[in-house]
Image 1 (cartoon, rainbow, N blue to C red):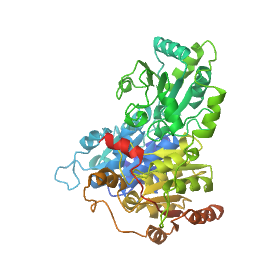
Image 2: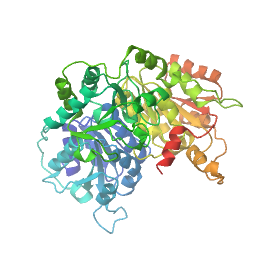
Image 3: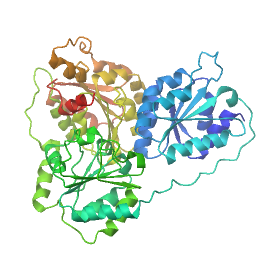
Image 4: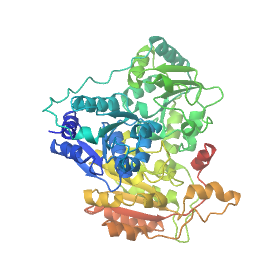
Length: 542
């Protein structure tokens, strides 16, 4: 056995069951060893797509994502996806061949490159340490929720190694009990609050039951950041997403809180609308497992360092009695009647062969099965699927937006679909992002995924049109002639329909009731309209 084979077998022994990648000479043997040991290999058409698939697989499946790439250009091709995963604190292990000879065409400083985007670099140092090095990298990724590059030097990969004992699974991640004094202060604040609101983020996705129990005891209204959308689905007090995607009622109630508790949420400019959703007299509390996260984006009145679930459970035990808090029968009726974007009136802007994107998305929400996983690309369109498509829970929404890169949406949907095969995958893309990631249409077809791919086509990079157009700047560099995306999809083996008016959505309903033996691309010619308000918020951050 050579080192590359030992590393692959060791990772499979640690529970790696799926690996995404594009295989070249530098990762050929380690990938084959993973497959031989029982892992499923998903071949992407581009390393960037493979990285994003692995990221989404980890986010929606809850485990470790694994990416395998060639040295040098294989890794550089994957860098945008790696940056997104690193910024999102996705537990992702990147296996990359490494050319250590400076004279090699493939040689670059791979460790420095991934460190520049926030990932952690590790290396297989020798034949003797190979299995231990690989196990340590995988455990680091899981324990600290980090994106970790495991460099596999070509000369070391080829060295013989004796049959190695499989690595021990390793200890489970340690919980982080909060400071009792901080828990007491939080309980005191909740006991005194008349209008408490919870905003749960990525770091709270494992803690729904504990947070719901505490919210019920304190009379709090629960909401989420965008990446945790769906966490409180089914709760009658759920406000859905806080931030640019918040409905008018949700924004009103969040802004009206006298106590806002952030649970595993960064409280960045998106979630708070640059602070506009935090009232002038609101007491702000942040709970996070990482000390450095407290107050990073916004000063807080109380910081609690600890695991979200454990903190919520301990805090609930300190509340002496159930309090009404923000909740009342009248407010319950308003939430049921007004909190969904579907219930907010609007003037339809469709016509002249183009459909209003709100109408399009609301109609699709009615037609598509409830059990779905929605992946959203970046762009001017992104609020429509985020606001008008419902999801069953927090694993039903995959939002790869930490790097704000256009073109990740289709690969995101593939990774999410493979993590949750019992749900209908829905990819929501702009025309720009769809064409950037078009190579992975072949992957969708090859894997037989019954995916619905919705392309919101305004024949432009809409964000730039709305950003620069009002000031009179020329827009020829960001606008494009019409493209027949439905025909392109059919050429890849998809079913496809072009939607210009609501009646055209009947073809989508027909696909849903059929065998779903091919993915469906919905080429929606959308009315351009004005800049979306969430985009205007984004402009303020540039």
